[in-house]
Amino acid sequence: MMCKLITALPDGVADALSGKTRLLFICVLFFFAFTAHAQVVDTWRFENTQQQDKALRIARQLRCPQCQNQNLLESNAPVAVSMRHQVYTMVAEGKDEADITAWMTRRYGDFVRYDPPLTAQTLLLWALPCLMLLLGGYYSLASRHLSAYREGGNMSLPANVTTPLRPPPVKRLAAAAVLMVAACVGGYMLTPKWAGCT
Image (cartoon, rainbow, N blue to C red; front, side):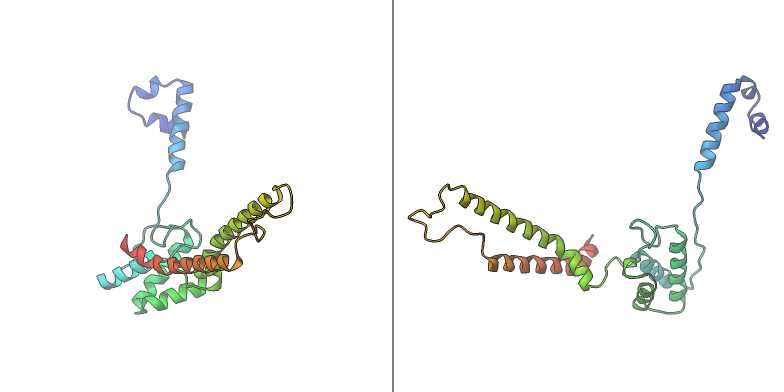
């Protein structure tokens, strides 16, 4: 077979190739042959352009559960192709967007939605980094105040200070934590509106 590939070259080129050059040529040829890949092509036919637009919009809003942050239109994974065809079928049956999204969520979980519902789990996901930052700040301030108090040398208080140095009040930190959680929830609620602006 290798000889057939070489003899298929134009006249004079095959004769000019030495043994090592032929081997290199064949390796390069096989390298490019193995790097080529096939793409899945959808040949779905819709009854009208409204159905097509609706199906494509829904497929664009659903995430492939197998891929790294690709929607159903961008992904060529077998599960994405199957989900895309399911969306097309459900649109052809006359189902609305909420029904299709609910069906996909029941089958594949909240991960397939780019805008998952606000639950305890998603609230924790949004609020936990802020709470960890607040706790770290509290610990840092408390340890700084405590070390400054201990390094004072004598443990008696100066004449002009009536109370010992202590960490920031818990009420202030609790209010800051509530504000951070409210900011996280507000950011979560505004995310779909911001996504529509881009």
